Image (tube, rainbow, N blue to C red; front, side, top):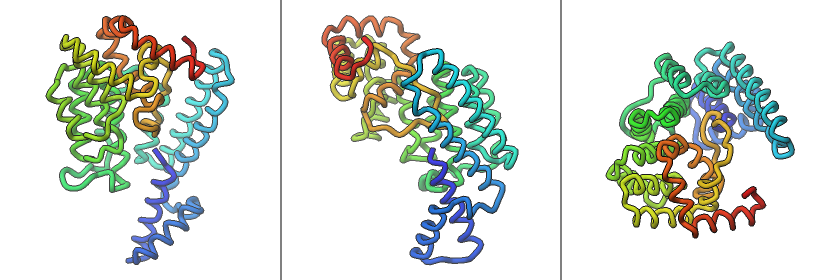
Amino acid sequence: MNAWDELVARCAQRRREKIGPLSDQAFEELLLAVRERPADFVDSPSEQALLELARALDAYRASRQDDDLLDDDAFRAARERRLLALASACDRAVAIDKGCLDARLVALLAREEDPDALLGSLVELEREASVPVPEGGGDAWDDVWCRPRLRLRAAIARTCLDGARHRMARTAAASLLATSPRDELGARHTEMLACARLEDEAGLGELDARFAGHESAWSHLARVILLYKLNRMAAARRALRGFDGLCAGGAYALLRPTFVDVYLPDRPEVAPCSFEECLMAVREAEPIVADTPELIAWCQDQDWFVASARSFAERRDLDW
């Protein structure tokens, strides 16, 4: 989430509504002015709350910069402090405007409830949300006021997957794709993993076809899981080679899972099929992999896959 960009867009749109019709050039000039000094254009509780959230997210991200220098205990303590600080800042934003859905979402995610409790809280928050998401026609993401609801639905889908509610995850992700077909939030990634767990080859194939040319670590990993679960081992090995060859560090990410921090509120932007994307895909697939314990043992039996993981670790100076 780029809270600053969305704050700028909201402030500029509200200012245009107040002063009347503007030419495209005049609106661009207004956007530039708001972008330069956004706080000066905040004139409503909803904008003030979003400003507080933007500052809180900046502070949270800045506090992570030296994590690599900390030992495990110090890292855990620092992480706990910054998540608590972020949740408290979100509470302050909500005190300004209870309708700040993004602040309420981030506060829930930062408190790291178990998946069942978190899902209940997210579903209740969605029931309370007052901003409807339009059905049909265009992409709801284009309306900056709809984005909080879309982010909430994406979080619900991921939490369903994390709690092994695979059909619910698929339904939530599919509904998000229906209202936001460009899929700026990556709902297809969640749905692909759900399809793999449900052994729905047709469903995964439809998503692959729909997003052809936009392959990802999720799509390659989902194909491996699906074919393995269907016991089509020759095809599964080919898919595993694809995951290894097309996703940087994919073998290492799968064989040596690495801690991935909570998304606040959505996935960070990384390059497609990069190592960072592999880490996220493997993290999100953890409940599925845990439910298919033979999968990792089978991967470890592929000598070339292990060799690729080891080679990547040596090149990146990673633990092996």
